[in-house]
Image 1 (cartoon, rainbow, N blue to C red):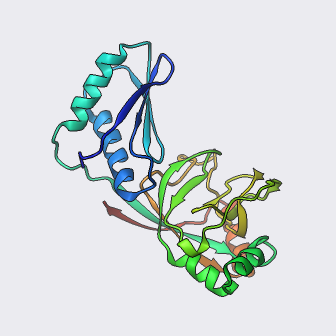
Image 2 (cartoon, rainbow, N blue to C red):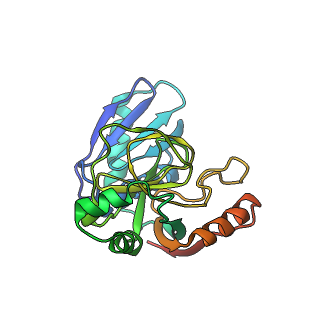
Length: 243
């Protein structure tokens, strides 16, 4: 996809910020990730790191560089017709317990939307979410694809402590807190999975471009999975394919 008008901005003296239209959309996500792979596969030199977000790439260089020269190279690369890159995408199936002991805001969202908690959970688990990028905490997945009925504004006053594994809704997004932290999203459940573990070869098992689907588990099933996760023997259900 070469149809987007991109902007290129200096980001300090060692980075370039490339920006797409400010929309959360699948076609933009795929274009961002495709351009990232084209840059990695190119002969452009002195690139230390490339970070992707909803509608942008941050290209970090090893040293100071000529902004005009590098932007021209990037523009030419973006416009170059190449064989479509096959980006491998994994669908991860993630267990979530929506028990009242975890779902601190289930009742409030249910009442505000005038839907039952059963319907709320059904809508949350039916969707297949795309991972746009990972931040603001290591392992925090920014997911697109939340059912519009469930869109809920962030809390005016954030909680000072949200439990590790908390599954939450913030605006038109859903996500999982990988560690205990403050936060202003609305909590609807908890997952026993580790979303970031420094002891693993890949601390974060997923990546931008992957997909997530939640499935509901009982409180007993949650604790059974938790035991396996803590013993480092739990295998997350997954399905690998190409986009």
